[in-house]
Length: 146
Image 1 (cartoon, rainbow, N blue to C red):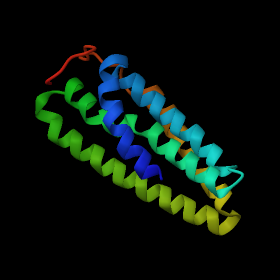
Image 2 (image 1 turned 90 degrees about the horizontal axis):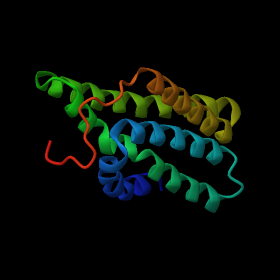
Image 3 (image 1 turned 45 degrees about the horizontal axis):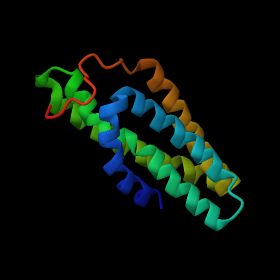
C-alpha cells in the first residue's frame, strides 16, 4: 500500500515542489511520513493499517520526487553524478536499515513496536535533515527545464 501511495503521489509532489519549494517539501514529507508511521503502530485494525500505509506512501513521496532536482539546482555541475549516486546509495542503505530495525525489534517486542521504532528512526532523520539541509539558493518557484 505504501508503494502504491508513493507511486501515485510522485505524480503530484514533483509539480507541487515548483510552488512550495524543494526544501519545504522535503521537510514536510519526512516529518509527515514519520508521524503517519507512528500512527501505523497503533492502528486498531488491518484495514486501518492498510489505509495508514497508503497515507504514509503519499506523505513520503515529496522526498524522492524532488531530491535529485534539489541536488541538481544546488550543487556544481561537476558533482551531479556523484551526488545522485550517493543519494541512491543512501536510499538503499535506508531501506535496508528499516528492514533490519523492524526485524530485530519485531523479534524482541512485536510488530507494533517494530513499526514505532522505524517511525522514530524516520523522525530522527527528519530532525537531522532539518538541521543540516541547506536552504535552496538556486530555486525559483515555477522554474522549469533545469
